[in-house]
Length: 308
Image (tube, rainbow, N blue to C red; front, side):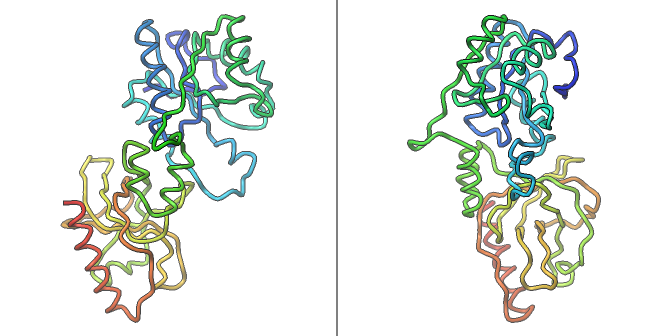
């Protein structure tokens, strides 16, 4: 799948494409509806389809100290967009230059001149340009005058509310990965490189793979039933994972630490993706290692039952 940069002129074979415009970070059911309309339109007209995203997220640009809130990495988005049927992913690199561009120039200079778009598809609340002054009305009026076609897709409703990234984040922060998965249409997944740790898990009989949380949203700290994919081989493992700061040990260190059932391999330096399925309990500090080991055993038994 092609990975395009908005600062570059789009290659000739990809000009005249239908572009799904949005951030599409979580690529939840609402995002999938917008992308699906763009892909359908492109297929009907025999054109390429491109799904756009922004990196960094505009919130990160304007509020660099804001808590981490990303639901996917660019690599994960690329794979999700490919699976949806898109021809390419377009990354808008959100910087001072892009944030200062007027809505009119975004349409004329970026979408039409540089990207060569034939049509765009957005959600009904999509905004763009300096001060977020651009909207679907401007896309239809100015874009139409310049030959750019546009379509909008209404919000996907669920239980009386639109499906949104905010709802996904709220569910994860509340320790409800099943609700997040329902809105996303897949489990929330954290991808990273397995790091060397302090070997605490190995010492107590439950070795773990250590992952830094990086820019991902922090789900509720606690113990989860998880599945994990080793990306180099495709092997899928089941396990229980601690998400948090490990209050039993000093000093506190934030990590995602999955322990895998029936696995005895070396994953250091490997890239893995951990999928959160069930929240088992919050983090806790116990009266000694024996009590901790007993509780971890119970956690693993419960995770096995839930994942069976």
